[in-house]
Image 1 (cartoon, rainbow, N blue to C red):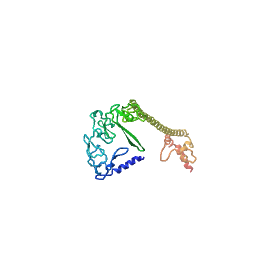
Image 2: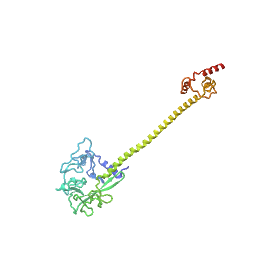
Image 3: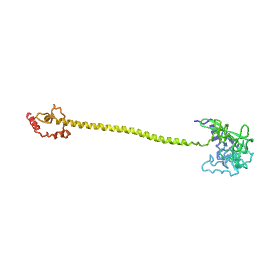
Image 4: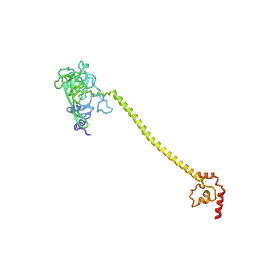
Amino acid sequence: MFLPLTLLFFSWGYESVHAAQGNESCSVSDQRLQLGTYQFTSDCDAMWFCNSSNICDWKGCRRDDFPFGYWENVTQPDKCPDGFFCPDEEDFCQQILPVGSPCQLNRDDQCEAPPDFKDLADHSGLGLNVNGSVCLNNVCMWANVTLGQPCVVENVPYTIYTADTEFIDIVSRDNCRLGLYCDAASKQCMSMKELGADCTADKECQSFNCLDTGVCGKPADTPNHVAPWVYVICGVGIFGGMFATLIGMFFLHKGQRDQEREKRLQYWREQNAFRQNILQMQETARNSIMSMPISGANSQRNSLYSRDGINSEDSQMPMLHAANKSSGLRHYVSDDGLGDSEESIMMKSDRKDKF
């Protein structure tokens, strides 16, 4: 974003005329108020003023508690005591001015206070006057004009700069008493208007805030007060959202837990069914073996357990035991008492005789 050209021009001019340091040459005729901001400007830097000899001299007073532009570790000049004021040049303290004396722009503090200043002084912070005194059109006055009486008004256009553009803001001041304003058309003091009344300028409203709709609105610094029911709704919404989130997460995780539990249950069922199948196969094999006939030398049972029967290529029976490990089926066979039977021994002898 670019600054307006006017602001850039003023900034360049401000730097160029504030380059002179102490004991350097300057020109009193160059002292002026910047157009648009009405800030006092001279050829000297912030710590010096241009004296009558056109030389930058050390300032003899200051207006602010924390003045801008002073170097670090530099002793700042003192502020003026009561009954005196420090002018814009900040050359030295001067005694306050009586009514009708010339004064500098917006320097109400340069004018002496009226006898009843306690009743006329503005304490609102809006800068209507200082101790009942006001500087209008560079003349010291008292802000004591009553309702319907002729008044003096001063309109000063200030330039407001934004990031993209600039516009004019007119500040209107007068010498009417507090609660009154000077009408620009009739030049008479009139009562300020309440909220909702039609207006054309901020000074017409008691709130000093004339809205764009042309009515007096609330003061610009009025805090926004929220009704109690709004707090209740917000609280219910916050806690309701929290509980809804917790409940939603509970059911979401519950569904995930159910899925995992179902997977584990299915796995257990498969393993259990596999085990039952194995046990059933063992039981079937045992029953099949037990149902074979045991009489006769050529019986299928004997041939099954004979050496040749086991190793025969024509045998369709599976091997039921190995040389180095035992199985459940071997125990079943040994329990039948056929391992040492005479028939088995005789069959072995006969096979040897044949070969």
